[in-house]
Image (cartoon, rainbow, N blue to C red; front, side, top):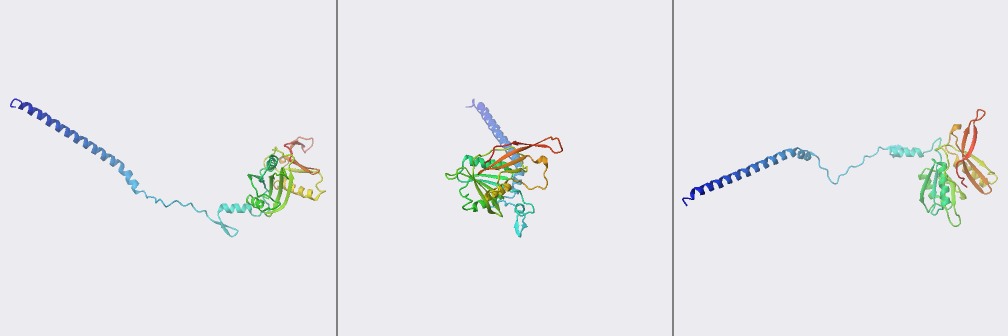
Amino acid sequence: LAKQAPSLHFCLAIAIARGEYCKARSRRRSADSLVCTQTRRTEFTPRLQQAAHKPQRSPNKTKMPKKAKSTSFGGQKVTPAGKRHLESRAPKLRENPKTLLCLRGSKTSTSSTAALKSLALLLKPHSKVLDRKREDLKPFDDCSSVEKLCASHDASLFAIASSSKKRPDNLVLGRLHDGHLLDAFEFGVVEAGGPCEKLLGSKPCTVFVGDFDADPIMKRVKNFLQDLLRGPDVDRINLAGIDTVVVVGLREDTISLQPHRLRLKKGSGSLPDTRLEVSGAPLS
């Protein structure tokens, strides 16, 4: 043991030195980690403070929409948009152009639907088409549904396409006065017509060919067709703006609407020569 004492002392010294080194290394690591955590905390503290100063929203409270400013029209409080809408519907010295409302009955055929669409294209942009089929459109039995639809769409003319076993390819045309039914005529479609060439919003020239005044019913039909095809009211007419001519012909019991395109060519005098060209299929 005496001989081995120096070696034991040396081993103990090495072990102590290793232990001290490990302790010092662990202390250094813990100090580094402490410094890192402190720096990270100092970096994130401003954000945490900002978030703490923000007001917290309660889950039950929601933003309420701003109320529109109220104005008065006719003694009642309405919004500005409602006032503009009521002013457009109010009576005027010069009324708006009459609008045709095109409707479909519970059962329709290809010919009646095509005739309805060709009539809407002829009167465009003063026409509205509702494609949904309706079962309560019977103006000769109860006209309340038709009057309600025309009032909601601001239309004084209507056209209803329908088809049944007794009345195939049926087309009903009518007009309202002061929101109530004035006239209604029932026609059977022979030719459905089609799209025609015309300028959008132009005022057509209407020509009636046939003896409409011999029969009182045909005389009333002529008055209705004049109201249907006249277009907007104007004070002056530009000759270059007349581009469409609708010829309404009566032959026996058949009424046909034939659209034409008016062509102006250079003439010998001061007035130009006019030529009529067929611009679409006839509607009869």
